[in-house]
Length: 467
Ligand SMILES: [Zn+2]
Image 1 (cartoon, rainbow, N blue to C red):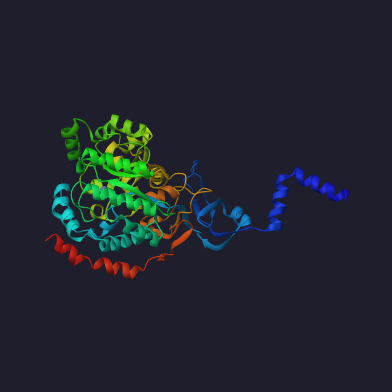
Image 2 (cartoon, rainbow, N blue to C red):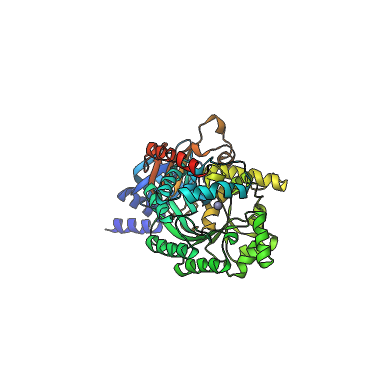
């Protein structure tokens, strides 16, 4: 007995020894999934990169991120994925797109914005957008996003309940905004119809684990003041996000000048529009004062460099936004103006464009670009407590990126490799909410051949619509 008491006393003095003893007695904790052996880029508060790291996932949640040996001692996965030689990172957050528009990819390029919209996009949408079109487009967009490492996207389109159902089936996470616009569109004859639709959509998807319903008033130049206010009131009533295009073109600034002798940002501020939970896409034509207002009101901004370049819209003042402390995410915009949903390309172009614009090669370095595509996007969408980094307690949204191509060899710095040489097609495995959506390039939630065949089936109908 005295020997036992002495042993207990000794153990109680050495917490570490007790921990070791209990781990040995109970064995490692059983969890659903362990991803091990890869370079783990956490994007956590200290920007920790773990050379031979591992992530333990249980159900939908990350339970530990550590060195592979430490995770191996503490956890045993029902499934284990060996990520040796690869990078494990948070899934990418695309803060602005119109997913079904992938069906208009390459329909009309190299045109000025108004001609592109009025001669091609709006007529094509008037004749082809339907629940069936939206479902086929969302499936194709979801396939492309899963294959290129996007795990969360923010969307603004029509028949958003169809986008939601297809997104849920594909297994992606999304903030989905039902569009409100002044003129008659496929799913609403009037803005009031659009608002009623948004209300029903929010009620139907409010508590979904993957879908965050939202209200998407299109822009200040396509809506009058009372409708902008009504759209914002609806999102406040339900406590859901608001998505809007802001200051995308110089023409929009002229509309704001004519309407209220001020900028688009200040006009919307005068309506009481801004606040936390609002995401403004583009934000190109903004003054210092506009940026200060967006920061003060807690608005998130989505930067879409490829779309802005392709449509010659202008260059968003990314460096100024970051300096001001605005939550800034990256987006691709719809595929009709990009023409793909590859967020790796968006990172690289965001970095290059800002360097060119500011004549400063230090602008938007690799670490900043990765941050914008992950935590920055999560913050801009108000989801930073749940996604955007690999940390204990967050949702298990992560991707595994192959680093073995000639293009990526040799690798001195994982962040440099991710931004300057990696492409979406280098992503091997995509996991959302703890569920593997793609393993070793095999998408598990969608029938790839059927999705592609269905999309090709729309070509003649779309072509006929713009003849
Ligand atoms: Zn857009």
